[in-house]
Image (cartoon, rainbow, N blue to C red):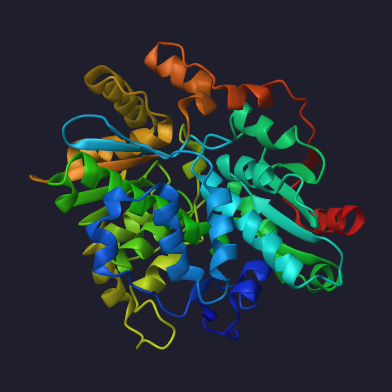
Length: 450
């Protein structure tokens, strides 16, 4: 399988090159040259398969041409050492709980898979520049998932950039207390500043001449593609719990950088029977406005209760537009208007401010007895008011409510217990370095410290 850039101004590359490079030389995002569909027989009995069995079949469709089956199976099974249950919230709404991994957030799946895949390729193609250096910007959960996914992996060092005072204490503790091969930089600014610094580093010739750089954000194909695994698993569980509901499945994705919903769209194009998607935004409603108007207008990030969705210029928007422009490198180009029409035919949007998020959290608890985190609440709210007759909705509960303990408790008025997996991080000592949002300062740091 070859991978091409969404900007279409860079040469095609192999999977290993796409994973190791992260970002294409023309600043585009890598995409597979085609999307392999899964056979009908796979879906006929999917409810009888385990998460690992489902994920392996999906992984073979993505990566089977480039990795021997036994090696790929080991990567998949080692990645998915935890459950991803579909929980019934009420008669029409289900929650896909993506917080049962080691850092209690959905990004554990993609980060753990990428760590194992990158380690596999590094062993196959040793670098002459020393260790591979992973640069990752985070608005909260990515940093913890990536840092823990790569912790102690030989030959790989990780630098996490995060916006000062804009992640929760528990999130911050999960990547600033680890040490070893993990370095945390506390950036003066917002997530978009962190993401800009990482992208500029990838484009800087001096840094690339000296270091072996790659990314673990959802811009990397090894991070976002494996997120498709749990969409198939969600369908399998819904089919087992309620076969009739599975015939009209709507999936609502709390959306920030749009890697998560992009993986879901890939799943749909592989044959997953999703009736439609809902992209639920917080006040950073750039994609929602695009759906309404057809115009994409990035803007400065606004801080909200759902901080992991605080993104003013989502990177994976380019992938979504590309998918609906044919989804393949050699497909005929269509106009922006035609791409917009194709997108809104399968994806609708919703947007909620902080007060509406609070109301959704209270409604979920009071009406259905279910505790949402602020991100999941955006999904719950969109399904509560956006499902059509006969439809059943699944929202992605992307992080454990305890990751936002103070915020959630203040809103719902009851204690949220911290799981043991999170408590161990709270007992650690924060070790981070201050950084302005100047690229020159960041470059100097990398040159002197890597």
